[in-house]
Amino acid sequence: MVSVRTFLAVAVAKGWELHQMDVHNAFLHGYLNEEVYMKLPSGFASSHPGKVCRLRKSLYGLRQAPRMWFSKLAATLNAYGFIQSKANYSLIVYQNGGIFITVLVYAVDLVVAGNSGDAIHKFKNYLSSAFSMKDLGVLKYFLGIEFARNSTGLVLSQRKYTLDILAEYGLLGSKPAATPLKQNHNMSAIKGECMADPEKYRRLVGKLIYLTITRLELSYSCHIFAQFMHNPLRAHYEEALRVLRYLKNNPGQETRSESNYTYSRCAATLYFDFPPIPKSLQPLLTSLQSPLPTNGGDLPKTMASTAERKSKVLVIGALEYIGKFMAIASVKLGHPTLVLLPSFHSADPDDNLIIQSFIQQGVTLFKGDIYNHARLVQAISAVDVVISTVGCQKVMDQTRIIAAIQEAGNIRRFIPYEAGINVPYVAGISVNRYDVLQHPQTGFEEYVQMRQLIEQSGVPHTYVVWNFCAGNFLGHSVNRQSQLSVPLKLPLLGDGNTKVVFTAEKDIGFYTILAADDPRTLNKSLYIRPPENIISLNELLSLWERKVNRKFVRSYCSEERILKCFQEANPRGKTAFAIIHAAFIRGVQTNFEIDPSIGVEASQLYPHINYTTLSEFLDRFIPN
Image (cartoon, rainbow, N blue to C red; front, side):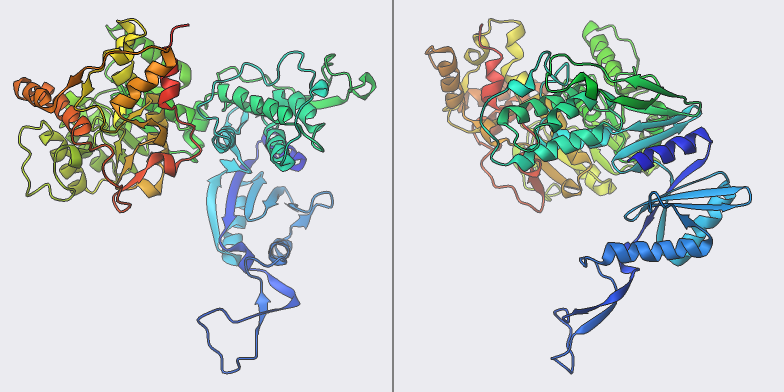
């Protein structure tokens, strides 16, 4: 990485252009110097069954393949006039008169820098004539680092790499830590059980060390953890996980390489709480003198416009109940996120608080609504994914969104609002039979019609079936009643034994955003049914009784009573009672196996997400 950072620093300081290229099937280009023989692949026949093939060119899987490919590339560059650096063979330099071009090679990725745009273009054409190349344009993403160029220099961020690590260790939903290490940690004095698999610790520390490219504040922590590589304790591993929870605070912090940089020498900070480091060994560090970012870790505008590794997401209806969870989850998973708002100031104080939280999280506010077609098309044209959370009263108004998506022509996924219900099952009909079955007074005619229009339009889509929102269904009365009222205010519908699903709202957001980029959910339904959150109301009340060590009288609401309420309700009430009847009487949330041709289950698709269990959710309501 020293060569990479020096290469980039010099390029920025001299104002060179930075481009990136990728080679298709690179390892197939190399010619073999050794004699390598291979059996005939299955399916090929030969008139000489005792003979084998001699390979002239390398194949993927051969140990010689990377070396042969690099030899071929070096020979091609040498023929153009390039000379390999003796200090680093992956750095290759071309100089002819006033033209200067450098190429940095990493496997099949090439970064090209030079002082002449025409010369770089000519060189790229030469490479394309020699190999099957993909021109990726200006440098955006290389070795897990995102790049964004502006007039003052180059911005480096490892946001995606950080989020990938958090996802790998299941900490995307964890509580953030304020600092990488505890104050006065005294790591050398920790005693405890050795790790059964020390490689797990070493891999984690290795990932953290790589993050120090842009996160200089982790240098001391990595220095400490590296001293226990030979025999790490379980406690050391737990402390290293704390660093990941610290990164959760600000995964997108950047560092800048400025065009007018200067070098400085500075002594390393002394940490008196770690005795094994003698003062005589305190090193001197060379660093680029550049201020640390203070923008809260959000991608700057230059990076938002150039970093293409994450889909851009538009949330329509972000002030509706589930909308805010979608927007925040999108930002936390590293997506450039827009929300469409009719105004940036609301008469409702609660809405103003949500808008302020969007700004603090780095969400981009876009003024407009679904009734302003021109603004709607403009917003949709700027993103890749559209998520609608417009609410029950505007279900059919989503036709305006579909029309705008068709006009924009760039959307890779549309997630419509369906209140989290499984429309075909709740409406009492079968999938793909919308045209022949009637929908008598269930209140779901609009949802059914909306699905028809989406599928007829050909817009790529995903339906999200999240079932019951735990906070809305179980926690809604907490603000108005005593804490103990949460389960007591729930009537035991039917016989109380039908299994239903409760999902925490933040988990709905995370699962939805993950599905928006996933080809496995394209034109399918994503069923959010976390195994530990599938429960009957009788089991729910028993769970609560165990938590508060009390017994409660159980009251039941029969099916006849529910149906009577349905008949007497207004249209909106009919929808609510239809959902209740479908879930608690007919059991439509859990009484079927998911057909893989039309749907997938979220917790199986994304096992790295540590969802909130129902037991954990109820814990927040237990009196202290």
